[in-house]
Length: 129
Image (tube, rainbow, N blue to C red; front, side, top):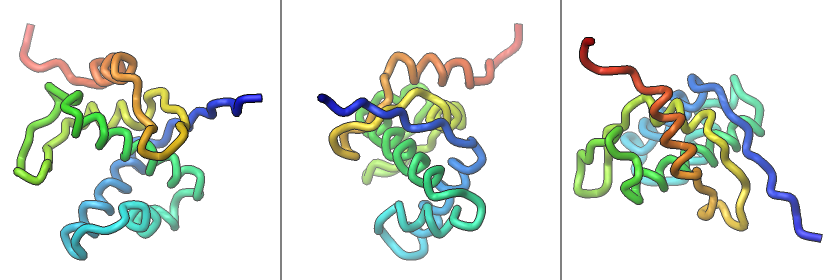
């Protein structure tokens, strides 16, 4: 019998941001390393392990989406190494968009259409009517 594909639960937006900021801070201070260690360091006092794991999956899926060029128009390339400025709407979508386990961690990915619909919902309207 095939294994049932399990959903990766939505996570609190604030925890996702704090985890992302922890990864960036460690990268700037220590150089490249395992982002999971940075997440644990940033979140272990406030979040349960299953939430930290879900944040890890969600940030990896967001990074994959952006690296594949699917985050436009909410991203702006900043460095030749692939660094981007990312609009908050993408982080908000990453915190709550449907996401499911896959055969490998690298295969976990958001459904592009569903993700973009949520990103649009999370975007603030620019301009005035």
